[in-house]
Length: 443
Image (cartoon, rainbow, N blue to C red):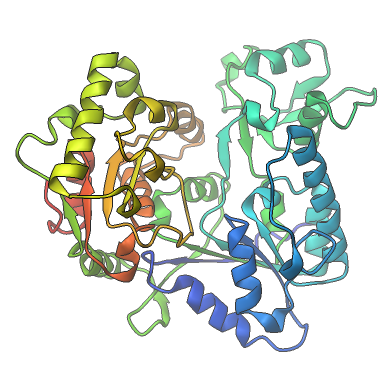
């Protein structure tokens, strides 16, 4: 397949709640006939129904062999059932593309798209619209995805089933057939689609066994689209931005002005947008309420791991004190978050069910919550930092931390410009939020 050098890429970088999705919907409503073909990717299944209803003129379909408006509600499924469903959806996606339908899918389905599917999208001339940035790079070895560990992959390399190419991507060398429902099949599939890679190494280390492997979204899958539009906020802080830099991808950086017109992005507009919402964000300070977060790495993954049971219990008491005695919150008005591995240890009594995952995106499900507790101090994981560093791309740890915090905060009532109260015990995170807000949010 001869891919174009790169598609036309637009990044609409505007604060959450500023109308990015509404703008795109309005533009798509103006589309007449079938001269263009769209593939829309959204983080959540729940958003598919909303998009189908909002853009009736596109007759959007989703890969289930039927009109997306009549799709059944998902139920809890076994790993085998989920794998079969994934394969079925992938085949249905190919069918819809071949029929030149306008399509809406989740990011997760886009992430497992095959090279054959990408080739067909390119041949049919599809435009991609992604609500939020895509997951472009992560460490390989996720057991929930039935992925091999680094040690297992090295064993397959030693057995000549897999090799490492000069381009640092893994190649499948095995000639025998592999059962479709086996973990080895998943490894073969990811190798065949150029999804597994290693960190670039100096020439003197090329014979050294790699101790880390990475999953990467195949760059040619993006190059196969006619155009790409990404809706996000603080794009320069995202891993997708680093991924673009590492592959030499150019994009047009845009934002929404107050009149909802697209204009070139600049720092002044971002600062203005920040000030417009920071006035509604009240950060809890004083009275030693934040004593547990004074150190630079307090509430980071490494910091929490070093804590003993008594120290974690102190955090639980502190967040419960903030929610009950300072905010006078109830579970139904609260959302709190921490690193998933420490959820049971840090869950404040009476608020356990108010947990909202740190990485939640593009949903309005929690827009009635006005009392927030964010028990995190974010740093990019060291392997990812090193992976991009080996490619000459430097990640801004502070911008990344603020963007992750704000994505979470904007799931709350602040989306509707309502007052919200935030318990943010990490001094580093409060300082970064203070700087982002132009001094409005207190330290």
